[in-house]
Length: 439
Image 1 (cartoon, rainbow, N blue to C red):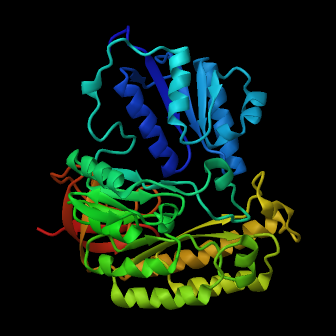
Image 2 (cartoon, rainbow, N blue to C red):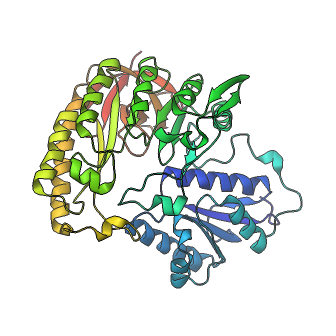
Image 3 (spheres, helix red, strand yellow):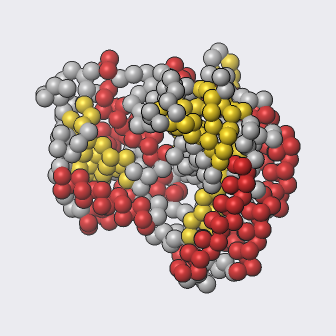
């Protein structure tokens, strides 16, 4: 790297949607000739892409901004916490600029103001797929911004705005560039993936010489044509989800649904302003598994929501036992500044929240372990994530990177990240599977 080339450091916090924002900003920086510094000391300035969803995320973001200021001194803040500019500047008045989420042009204007772009941009150094922060063999594909829901525990709409879907042709073209660059798994993300295209009234777009609706089913069909896995995240259980299950059974997309349900009790769901029909969800899960027996279901839940009684919590545990979900995350309710749930009566004591969280996870761990044990003896295709002298770390169709388990293949094998390999499952524990290659 030339010493005359401006160096920009970058810190990306928060969810995969934030990661995609970071990748877009980094791609633009490289397109304009900036180099990316990998230390505070080597950077002319630092961009911090923040998260502001819950108190812990706000605290982490503020600490990271402080660290960047101490180590470098020239910091631009962007991301969800950026909508609270007064709060950021009250703690760190020395930041150069503050912008909100997915504000790519504002970030670049701030960079230009404090670190002018080179006169001769190195356009040829930017690959067609842009600059990625994930390993080469998988990538997040963000299909929309924002959300039209007004869940009482969530402030995402105030941070990221209402639903704004990307045209399907633009999404498919990005996916094509990613696959052509070596990506073997596309992780479809948004705040509300099931609602994709609602704001555009599912208008048609030209894709490969054909007209395609901007709708999740049609997008999934198009992505399924690529030689890569397609995994769907944040799919709320709207009726339209039923149309996706046959695509999974046909192996066009992975038989995997990341479906945030949050609770099972009707009254709690109503207080959350969520769809309140858990009995219909159970019925649909049974039907989905009849159509696609290999379907993996991941979900997230909140315990200790204001007003949650012991009986309502027990109903949630009963739901877990009946639904037999494969992968589950759970959070004790945390009041987020600006969320309407903060004003609800009968707040649950923190000690009781934690007690319920522990009970919830104990039930789910037993379920997950049993479902993993049932896979022993099966053969499956896995995607290699990492290789050491001692073992190969891979994932099956049932495992999303960073949030689910792994398939661990003992011994040294001539494999590389991004390889697909057939294995036989030989063992399991609470989270992971153990396997050996099928020779």
